[in-house]
Length: 67
Image (cartoon, rainbow, N blue to C red; front, top):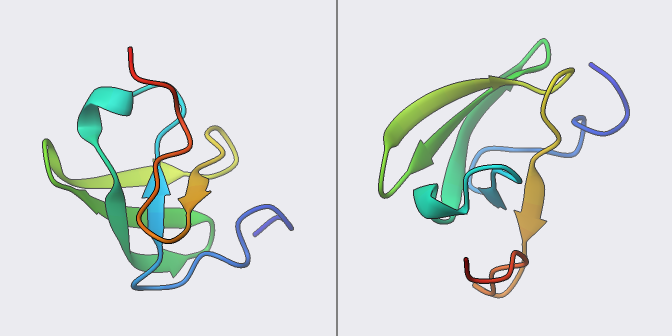
């Protein structure tokens, strides 16, 4: 795991920077840089954090602008 993904823990809310249409997802697991996220519009997706940097969402607010 790199420093960018070490903080991702189950229960945290995140957005995919390239897929705002997926909505705000909840981290299910983070094992060896492979993060499983349950997105409301897509379902469970496994993301390799060496390729994609997930954006944390705090207080239920989305960080990405509406597209």
